[in-house]
Image (cartoon, rainbow, N blue to C red; front, side, top):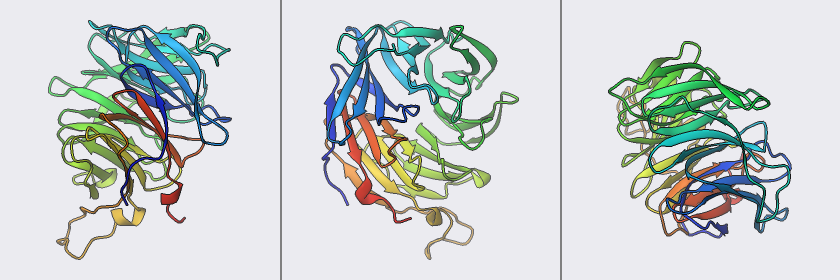
Length: 351
């Protein structure tokens, strides 16, 4: 099934690329997003879905002086989040705290909790410990991966360990394995690298060109999803990672981001520079069964499991976030600053 969007919209004042579910907010379905303006004062918006699900309300609007290239909410404290930002000349990363009182347009200033200032190159992302209360973070620049210990009470962050990806690789992003807190996947120009945080060493890799996004399946161990520029979406079983176990067509232009649903196994969102968000269902059985046309020994399938395509955008879509509180709800963000909230209830698999 394909069609446009009937979702709930919200417009940011400036261009934007990143949006995050506020996982620690157990009372409301809420998201954080930040703008990307070179000349204007940038903003962080705290958005909440109304109790009836019919309106997206701005509960807090906060000044952020620099362009926001990455934003992630803390999984155990709804007032804490991270940003990667550019001053126009250099990149930085910081941990911020939302003030106690918010809900009006002239909200108090964000409080900087700590700066992740060990980087010398272009910083790409910050990853939070995937579940539970643990003050550990990962940050990546183009050449290095850092593991940090964050002390919010002391307003400090300490590097625990670091390593380099090597001169032949340029890191661009990554994901923390929710099934193994010592495992992290990092995307690059020519591969996906897997790191063991106990030794801070690379333990494996998948050689793929131009991987833009990566996510672990939170409901199934060893399953990783990648989004690639022109070759679409691939599902990998990391126990046999020489070839993907499933291929999805992706987008008509670059496939930029991919997100696995936190609750419904096999439900995948993707976003692309074709100004669309696609909803897929890659059932668990389809990653194991072979089609009659497959040669003996082949585990790869190319199938179209597109449930819906949301096309109510006028620009490339870079930001995606499932709601942890209401896992049938997701937020998307296009480069022109348009946030759209959608419900996928009509497409949920029968469990």
